[in-house]
Image (cartoon, rainbow, N blue to C red; front, side, top):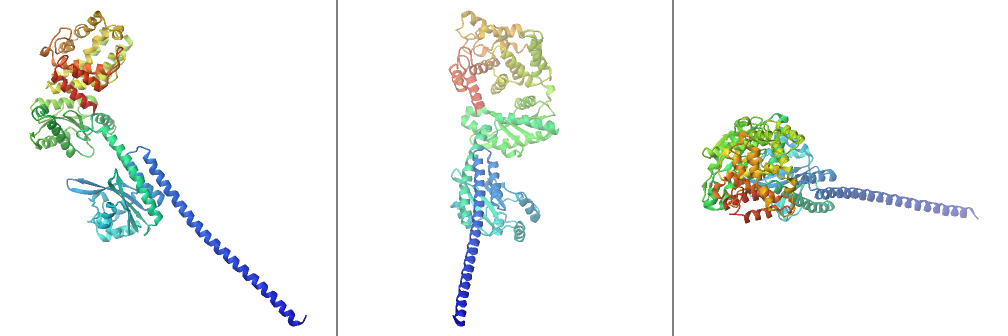
Length: 630
């Protein structure tokens, strides 16, 4: 092989090596590029997965809300905070359209971050709530809401100035820059197929991706369901604490609230005042124009109370034409001023056919007139009734508790009965009940507890609190018949004591399942006489109560006992006790029958009209009971 052949062979081998190296370089480059592409795709997929996880977590929070029975406000706050927390939006709000006497306006009902309020105050020297907000009236937003479509825009200045036209545009731009907002997203919200409000989301990005838009659409559908459920839950809750006719709070809520307010008042050493109010001449309105017009008058009173109440005041319909208002932090002087304002506002109302209406009001202050809630309500009621007795359409401030005292008479009567062993109660029980009575000089709660305890000695089915219910309903009924304060006080004492004669009857007779014999019936018919003559007659300060108790089993048609009195021969107080006692007896289980429902008891009361009781009394009683059942 010659030199040239050797060089040629070397050249060929060199070219092969170069080709191999070049080919390898290309392969390495391709691998690198493929790896880089895969890494980029993995990074994108990881971000998408992270976003999907956060979206799922947000939806999970909403689902949890739907199963929690939480109030609407909690659900709305959870919604806006979920958007901010999991999806990284800067701020989110829910706004809802409201209306008042000045027209429609927007109110923020949920907000995700307090620091935006601070930024707003920094630029505008006031809170955002100081402004009356309007909905921006430009077509894009209107169309989005009417079509229930999500809308996104970078025109933040236009949006904010649309909400609050009074703001300076340059300040608005500076505020937007400081908050680092680049765009907003509006999400219309529905509840029960109607527009509920709008969610506004502020983002640090100018654009919205398709996947983000898809999520927000899904999110909107879920939160609409959550809002609907929470709205229904709140409606049910409100029905439980509000009066169906007037929209005010009901008696149950009022009684719960005033107990809490009393605890707060003692802790903070701050008085509160109760105003008691009674619509004048409701019976005359009902008789002359019909019950529908009576309801119109009651609703008119409620509207006056709503218009004249502060946000912290509690106005409640207690039943029939009676209302109570709690004024936290207000003494009797301020309470009187507030009551006069309410009285004048009611007097200024003019209703179709009825004309002007009026009301009688009483005012009493906790820690001033009394430091016991039941007693406070009692003397408020007495002051209100004093206004009615003195000519109606006026305000009366209550007398301090120590100046009024049917309770003290009742307490002393119970102490006398127990300490002198006028009834067969063992020494231990007698001492326990006496001590309870003497813990405070005048305390309705202790008084009712003792009365309940004595009834339970011969009636195991008696429910705690039953005596107080009887007193309350008997009092309402007495007012329907315009009884004087003194007569009502006697009636209250009689309700506490009328059944005490049963303690003298053999227990096997009271618990007998078999039909009563003639002898049994004669024994039972003696219990009002026993109560009146043997137990109560020796107690001098209740002499005027004894005739009421002695005649509380006389029937309207003359077939009652013990003296077969009839009609007007029977004191109205005795008639009231009979119907109240009969109704509550029907609600209790007896050895010979099951307890009746309230509706069943009312039907039985109706069946005895003009036999056990006259029709007028029965109708008024049934009206009160049905009101208490709401």
